[in-house]
Length: 286
Image (cartoon, rainbow, N blue to C red; front, side, top):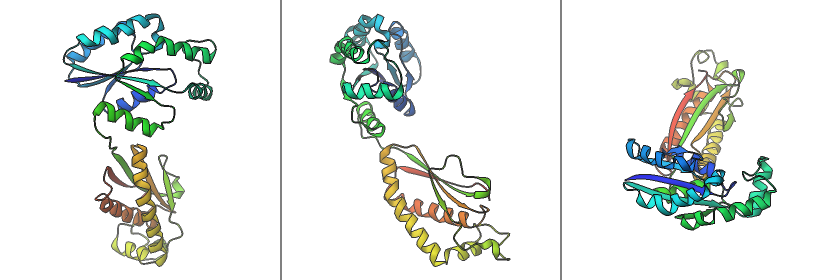
């Protein structure tokens, strides 16, 4: 059976974030679908090969608020072969006021902000009653909202899939633009000053041995591994999709490459206990 998630609720409560969350999880999404187009959208749902859809419908269609109520009270009950899930988002008045102040956007109903919020609450009261789930976003982080929404619509605990990118680079050529965390390896023993190692790279066994046998390197790696063992589960819980760990040295050929490869091997082993992430390794400037 096809799934149709209908997102409604108060302005500023997070409807657009919910649509983005669902879109990132393979839902075909339409934000602020006009009520008069709902029947045509249902026909699209019935005829397309996709199985998961999501739309937001709210007070921005205030002139058709009665038609929106009709969708909830009559139209959805007649639809076969489609499972509707109706979500209603709300938040404390003070939180909504703060959110509008932070974004500097005006309320869709115009006028004084607090009175517009109260008016919207009255207009959508029937929609709230007819919804399957009412979600108060006042104290939710984006990660918590993501967990909650996907748990409701998928009926299972959401387990994110984090992609960890490990990158070695040269400081001469600049930091990688997508770096989340950067480790400087320029204090480690430098193979560039050893004649027989200078023209090799950090992938070579002799270069690896030269760098890794240093007590400083051993201690450095130990600290990084401890940090990542603590950090990665927290990042997965936060709901991030990408996390880039960068290692830099002067030329990007020796020390950064050796350390990047060692951490890549370590994280491959760590997957057995933490899971829920994939790995990639890039030597940008080798």
